[in-house]
Amino acid sequence: MGTAADAEWLRWVNKKFGKVAGKEKEISLEEFKSALQVKESFFAERFFALFDSDGSGSLSREELLGSLRQLLHGNSTEKLRFLFQVYDVDGERRKMRSVGVFWDKFGIWSSLSIRLWLG
Image (cartoon, rainbow, N blue to C red):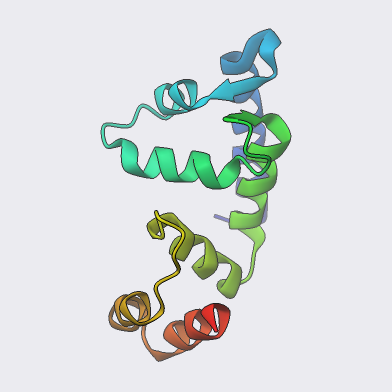
């Protein structure tokens, strides 16, 4: 997406959030999954957990839009860090097994970025 398309998409997400959240101003995991209309809930649950920066069990508009902006406008290392966190379900940051996965999927540069981040 280009910058204009990104901005338009974020406006759409903001509007959709308002409809889902209503007066509550925050959405639950179930509301998040319903809004996404996902069949496989693993990714919805992981994104929700990562976006819920205060650990409250709900997403505020600020948490959601801030996380999405970071994904849209972050550098390659930040995006890889997020991808790693999606799959790091237990939070253990297993170095060797995960580095091997990223090595095969993304090539040497990405693997080195992950290795340095895990360092």
